[in-house]
Image (cartoon, rainbow, N blue to C red; front, side, top):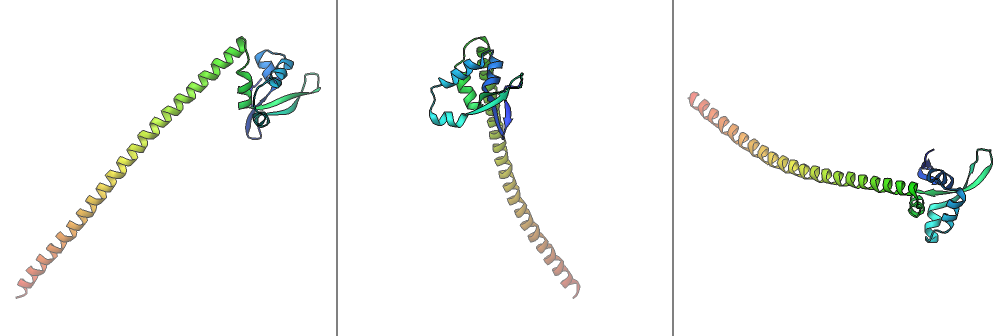
Length: 155
């Protein structure tokens, strides 16, 4: 059984799934939900009434919740399963943090390299312009020399 499902482009779970995964009765999960000390806005944003079909084919009520609602609820759970989940959650968060920090370090390094390459490109561009100017001047001088030699040969 999957703890999280994608519904309407959002990660969601429900009270029945949580009860099954954490080895609790669905009634206890519903009670825990009703006792949450969160704001009404948080409750509205993260918990909605829903239903599921039992193994006997009955339509039963449950509460669907977002990841934030799930986290808020499950952080209050106790017991071995809850402790395992909390450790997994903390480990996943730490891995995500390491990944983000690593990404940030790599992005910073690439940004600095990009600035160095741009600076080198600007220096090469200036050098290229200088070479081009000097080459034109040189060719003008060569052309003038050839012109002067030709004038003398025509005499």
